[in-house]
Length: 80
Image 1: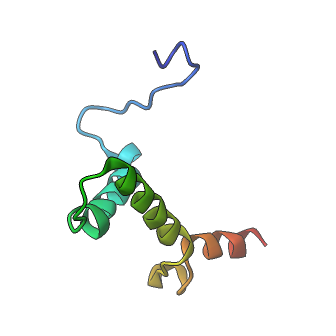
Image 2 (image 1 turned 45 degrees about the horizontal axis):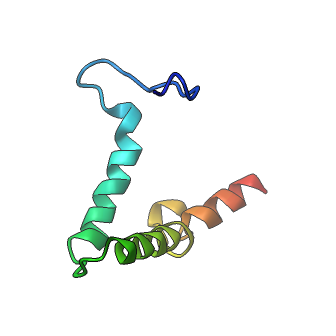
């Protein structure tokens, strides 16, 4: 199915998760910060809340490692 859509699947050696580490880290944080405390049962509401969380994660949340900037602010500063 991926080949038909022109998508190249990322494959590494068995046991090497480095190509997927950033995605795994992000999903781990989403589960910790949003999912485990989420009390609803409506998938549409969860999808809305997930979108809000991703927006907050990228645009509002600051990281000490990024000099106290959000990821978006940091990237904009680096591009300038």
